[in-house]
Length: 150
Image (cartoon, rainbow, N blue to C red; front, side, top):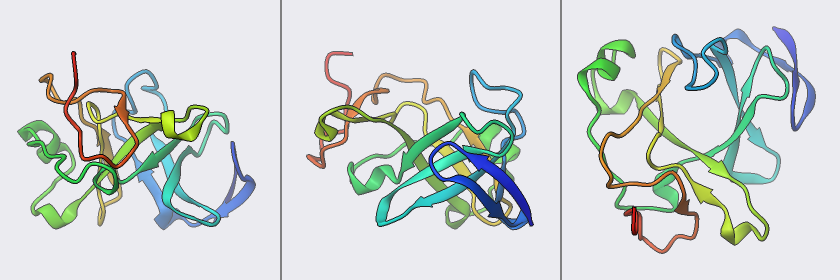
């Protein structure tokens, strides 16, 4: 057990089995390799991906399939090997949320999902290298997940 400072929840105690390791960090945050996924009280749809070393580095994330049921992409061999993925059941997919006012204007990054190996607790942000999806997909569950005009 250890104590960390969080952006949205103050000081919390976490267990080492909650840690998610990003071996190469996140794009733009290469030195940040250890995070924890925290629930938001009273909210089952959104979570916080919180750095364990930098309390200000926290991302609101969600299951993109909750909003975009037809979202699909192929993982490349690099990420499959890096995360040691052997079956689809190993994979958890999350999208980073950009919050806006009003909330209905918030967006999901479908272009760069976070892929987590659920058993090994290792992760990587995967950049989809085609223009099928956007970094600012509407959060409204309207089943339109394709990038429009991009």
